[in-house]
Length: 337
Image (cartoon, rainbow, N blue to C red; front, side, top):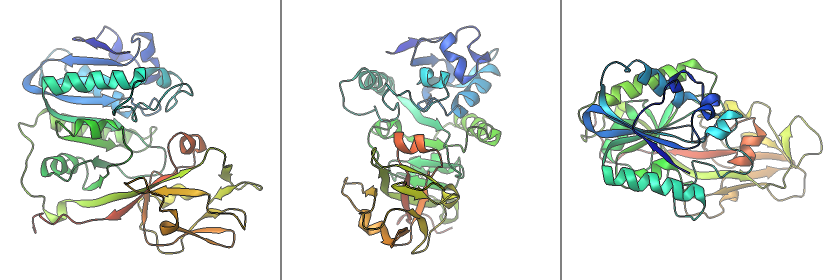
């Protein structure tokens, strides 16, 4: 599935994400030279409806057409076929950000080929760039509580999320051999996300080294993803509709990154039925009863918690999850400044 190139084909930088299929055949890895090595790895369009990464990197490459990049770049462009249709993934596809672990599908083998090549080449760092569908601030994610990871994350925003699930994400695979972060740049139609990504990638390309010193307490707001909340495929969900298995509150995406108090209302479901949400922890254990309870037909949170990635897009809920649940944590070894 993978094409590897040493150049940017003519006309590629003029194309929008949904037009890339006109020139590219599929997932493509570009190795581009720069003043410094090793290269900065940048992955974009792992989800076809998240164009921010492509829009940011095409801007940077366009403005460096006649001058050398400050650092070499290895650019991976992912799911162009889903991008053609403005979809996260097509119905017959795997999620391109769940294939970076062991598997024998063509998608898994393609991702493993990218990993093997970049591990052998050596990297300065890895940056995976995303949009999201709900109302969320810009933030960075890490998979290791290592100071280089956290410095690279806080360069984007002081809000940082540490997670180890779901498995198969690009940053988790690359964190085994380089400093890796994931950027969440807000919703696709917000140009501030593109501007923020351009600013961040420019800073990374001009870095000589990533600091490893302790992070100052006031420079980071750190959260740990403790559970993933999913809804079974046979459960009917929606908003303001009768007869559903789960009717979510209409403004559910406004709950993102708010520390919800006990008994916050999430939605309604039929009385005398078990909770239809399924929350699993990092050990893939069912912890639904630890986070949710039924009050008659009302579905409420049982304990204080902060959600992320809540969305009103029921197709995204089906393809991925309803949300992630986070708790605030403090690094024991950060600077007190």
